[in-house]
Structure formats: structure tokens, C-alpha cells
Length: 219
Image 1 (cartoon, rainbow, N blue to C red):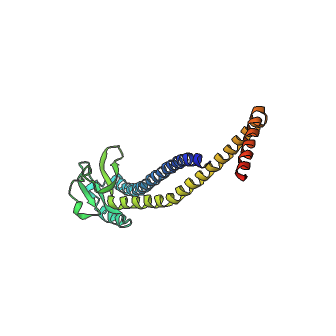
Image 2 (image 1 turned 180 degrees about the vertical axis):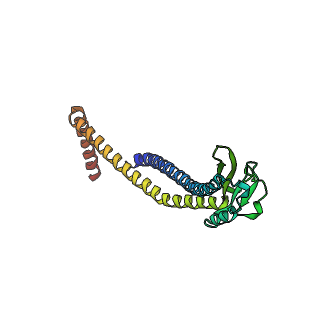
Image 3 (image 1 turned 120 degrees about the horizontal axis):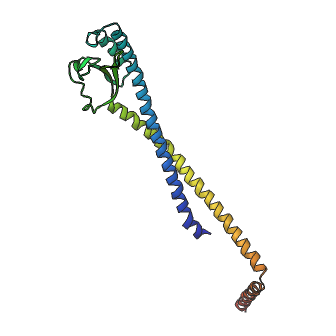
């Protein structure tokens, strides 16, 4: 029983450990995706609010470069979230017209080279469906990455004791199953031996041999 357990239980422990590791990976991946989606939805709400204000002004005949109230609006929206690096409104050529960060105004948006930012872009279109510009929400990419790392570390920290407990409980359960199966196998063998006259004769001879050996030792 001990040898069988030593051979079998490590295999069960490895299988259970791999299953728990896969479950933990799926959980961490799901939580990370949910965190990114939450940030994107927050950025989308802000970008849509700004786009609605811009479209309202466009409907009144005020062209995008003439909407001089936008810098104050962008600044208020940017200060509402500490992750925000800047909120930019650019024209169809990709040049920033207004920004919560004044140093970005008048420069190319640089969307393709903006590797440090976690971006969300909301295209601007007029009533005829023609593009007139873009609203870009730029979050600090490093801060977003740190948030993801914190969430993953917390998930791993919570998963480790649960995984260890699952391995121990699963191994103990497998041990009980093996013990039960071994007992059943022995019972079946004993029943078969009892119904076999040759097996009974062999058992009697074995017992007689053991008794004779014991008597020889006593002499």
C-alpha cells in the first residue's frame, strides 16, 4: 500500500497542481482583461462627452478650430482622473488644436509613436458623416501597467494557498480511494481463495510449515 501510494500520489498531485495553475492563469487573465475594459469604458465616456460638446458647437456653425472654450473643458476633464496624461483634440491632419497639456497644442498628435500612453481615440464627424477631427484620451501607460501588476500579484497571492490546499485535499482523497480499492481487491482475492480447495490446501500446508518451524525453534 505504501509503495503504491508513493508511486501514484505524486502523479495525482502534479495533475491537480497543473489544473489549479491553469485555473489561476485563466482567473488572472480574466481580471486583467476586465481591468483594461474598465479603464477603456471610463475613457470612452469622457471622450464621448467631449465629442458631444464639440458636435453641438459644430451644429451651431462653429468650426473646430474656433471652439476656444475647449481648453478649459479638457483641463477639467483631465484633472478629474489622476491617470490622465493629456486630453487632445486634433484636426483631420492629426495636428493637436487643443489639449489639457498646452505644450502639445500645435504639434502632431503622434499616435503611432505614442508608446508611453494608454490611448483611447474618439473620431469626430459632422452631421454629414465627414471626419472633422479626433479626441484622444491619453492615460499614463506605466501607471496602468502598475495597476495590472498589483492585481495580478494579489490574484497569485490568493491562489497559492488555495492551490496548495487543493493539492493536499486531492492527494488525501486519492489516498483514501486507493486504500478502498486495495481493500476491495484483497476481499475479492480472499473470497476466491476460500472457494478454491487447492488454495485452502496450500494455505493449510503453509500454516503447518509455519507451526513446525516454530516448534523447531522451541526445541
